[in-house]
Image (tube, rainbow, N blue to C red):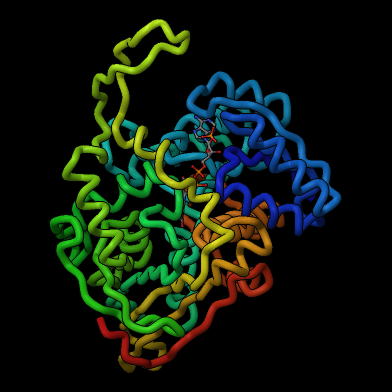
Length: 411
Ligand code: NDP
């Protein structure tokens, strides 16, 4: 039915590629392209042996529109799944426009030299995608992604007006490392060291990083200290569901993780500006001064998130807690969530639960597009599409969801 190009060969791309290969009736031709081709080849090898597929590979620097255009022009996919880093969103969107390809990603654009993310850069492409008759699907991981679809599902089925939305993201897993991040360390540390931000009564309210926190109880897990963070889906959800009066995002962190993070920041290792560093020359003839970004250097010495899976136990629990007016005119609450086991994710795909909860929805979004269920020209956040067929697939593809009606939301 469809030909796709996956860009990136990291944790999320690995899970998405497994899921793509498990759905051969929809994904008939697949290529994986990334900066380091050997990683694509190793992944394709595993997939082809496991699923009897014939996944192709290529090398591409996705920072270069020219290289992307050359690859897209020769491979001619219907859809590009951008599972590289948020830095590449705009170059890949631009190349899609130049070659007539549709686009999907899981994280909104972020400039390399500024730890700041917002949708405006990608929304600026709306008219060009519309005019070209192409579809760009933004934020199709878990959060953003499934959380946005959960919200759309709640609006469609249960609420006449949603007033309070709290997205709650708990990782109660243990990877048995002193400190590690669950996805790309550079992107992750940039995200959580930013100031907090939430939406209330038409305004955004900024907080100090991790300033607001409280224990929240997660199903099957229990209470975990949860911290208010700035997260990208809030920006589109309050526009697409204008009855929302307050929208917040919470994530759990253990005390040890926060202590390490504090040290990393205090000693300057979270810096994203360049510093000079005297490094040994490759030919062994002394030293030379090079410029490095401390956070990128830190990434090189931290555990690779892709290697956490084999020793990861416990589970994630991510969901939406919503309060508002139900279809019968009475006040109601609704909590919809998924719990995902790190070990089960590892056994199926070789990756831990955080990559799994992102890669599976990315595949489902691509499936929705290729089946023609989600495909309208323009640039769209996932909550702008019909949530029902996506919710059905979540149950089939390994991320079943559960509902609690009129329970205590704690928030
Ligand atoms: P990884 O670091 O594991 O993988 C990133 C991949 O992108 C690597 O294969 C890397 O190649 C490749 N890449 C980086 N730069 C380029 C480039 N210039 N050209 C081509 N390829 C490049 O990251 P994850 O898999 O953990 O995360 C992938 C994406 O998923 C990120 O954007 C992240 O923000 C997003 N995400 C979204 C979530 C959600 O719920 N919505 C949750 C978690 C992650 P190389 O191996 O050579 O470095």
